[in-house]
Length: 414
Image (cartoon, rainbow, N blue to C red; front, side, top):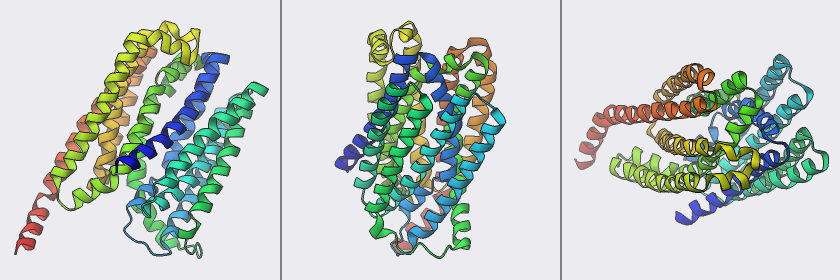
């Protein structure tokens, strides 16, 4: 188990490093402006890309079947939702009417996120067959396919859209490699089973909406900050809060490796093992967050100088505040992800609706008045709301399943 987590963490670290180096390069060469443009494109596209996936990879990963047609319905559903995702983004671009550079940046981010949707479902198939190596290597290649072409093309052209286009091309090659490595498990991809696809979409939708809303609650203060303070303020906030993105990848590596076990413990009624896994994971995460907060407080100026250049060194106090907020955001994200296995999708969905409402309300009240600091405070509000609702969720499902589990134990003992 530890080896699997370590290898997956290595892939996610490379993936994260590639995306962070995009931000770092833009900060050093262009300052907060280009960083803000990239952040705006990612903020508009990423939540919708997540929604289009419907998080069906998690269902595929946990699906107990091993028949040859298992992948067919997941594959067709993912293709259909990805096409819808492209259409929606094109509509948003036409409605916004941004300048050419920002418009092209949004479209190329859309392209490589769509390609990532393809890799995602293929990696889910590999996980269903207990092969974590394909996901680890896919993330590793996507990390390299981000930083290498982006750096080369941006230095050659000084064009953000051109650099993002090169990333999309590299990720397309990774997706083809994922397809080739999982081909033995594809089974029959035809015919298109419309009824099964609709059924799968209905099963996936509550989880997909929950994950979308969870991510969107983090994007809300960014979009609000850009609206009130401009793209440069967004660039500063995005650069400083990239620690959350890095941490989310660590949370994802833990969660992906433990989700099947957590779901099994819950289904078997072993709540002690269920909570033991969550508490151990939380302890490891909080230990890493404590190290990060200490580094930000003591060496923040030098870290910002190295990572983003001299234009960001005056934000050391803000950087420490972001590091503290990030620890709460990551803990809330870990708990929310691991309780997916408790079969309480609709409770989680409505909890995330409440979290987005909290993000919108606090952003509207705080960001116009306090600017970037207001956006940091919103992160505290969102994470505190998520933690409280996750605890309520766990209490609800324990009470809901208490009687059925008692009956099952009685029957088993008889």
